[in-house]
Image (tube, rainbow, N blue to C red; front, side):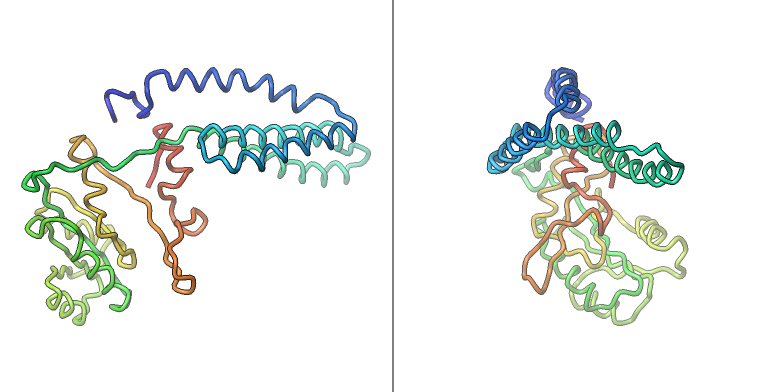
Length: 293
């Protein structure tokens, strides 16, 4: 936590600004959602909102993003008001049952939209902190690469990338934690000059593998990479500054990207295909002191 910026890393007064903005926006939203419009005015209103969204999307400012969220909430809320007050069928039990099931699904989707916007309205954008100019003040780091049954062809690239991390050689130790106890992995580690670590059992899977390696580790900090996650060369220089600034900091989580061999480009990790990473939703959670890894 930054003592100069409060518990959420926000400038003083940021919380008050949020409350004032939401409090002033709610009456406007209620009016826009409930005011009755004939078909013609409703068509004009929709066209104006659509054109405004097209213009706003060209502007990458935070204000433009908030304005687009407001437009989206206005239209969605207006639709839900119409849906609940004008379209529910009460003439028969079947109509009520089927209609209620559908409208509950729409209400659920609407609530997810509202909560999502509320979560990411003010994301906390942390920037990398610079390290001391004197490299003798940089801490020692042990890099752990746990593996079990992944082929060497997968693990090799991660290990080789770790060996060229931009960090003083005498302050960096790389450990391949092989729960598969494979001879080809031991030989590979000897060839590239990294530590090969194994144990006599596989208790507690990856967590047990890491805990066993920690008993043999001497570094001041530990960086853990999945065996198919290739670290950028600047990884340690980008992430370690926060540890030196805040001695109480325990964990730093960084974004990761998927590489598509077919398209020859890197794409951000998708929350639908991996554990959440510092995307917009996670940065929004951090603003509420609710980030997760």
